[in-house]
Length: 296
Image (cartoon, rainbow, N blue to C red; front, side, top):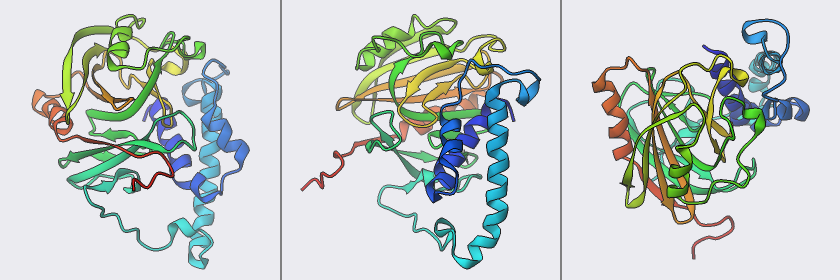
């Protein structure tokens, strides 16, 4: 596992499991969400950056919590480990409630927030159908297929320079439409746009953009190139591999800009890569009412 994949899984674990139980000190939790990208430390490997040091400290805390949890479960001190959850709901099961392991073939859904805040209510539900061979990892909006992967998210901006994420996002931000984001992608440093066009997914129109990630991200902050800023933890979509072929479906959904991102290893067989399009073809998108609005 690379350092970036370790970070993504650990962030998601903290938010999705332990943070929900209120068991992690607030200082540790906030340090993981807001680890600076441009503060280097001496050393190599996972110790090469301050991010790596903090992540390892968080991992040690998680280990202590899990060991203690083995005792606490029996006495009912950890309510989120009690009993079995009822996962079946109309139209699919919640992806975030699946265990971090291979997922059964079936239909799942993700609720996406419209704003980049931890307490932001969901504004869009994305439902998708997976064949066998896909995995739930600790990043809520990442669906892992070994040599292929998918993200669902609401994109609110682009980074000034994806290789130097410490510079932040664009100001003023990219305009609110799918066309605005598609046009802005042509000027992203070190990313190459190879094709663009109009697209429709589940009746919602937008833009399809095909890109190739930078050839070498080893000198980038955190050794990764961050493309999109999104509204859901970990709040960005990176290039998971150098020279990764990436396809974005950017959709206008009643004022919310939903992005489906597909990537794969450069050596992945075309028959496997075709699965990505099959999953996208299965996608259904449902705008959700504002918080507190029962719809009646």
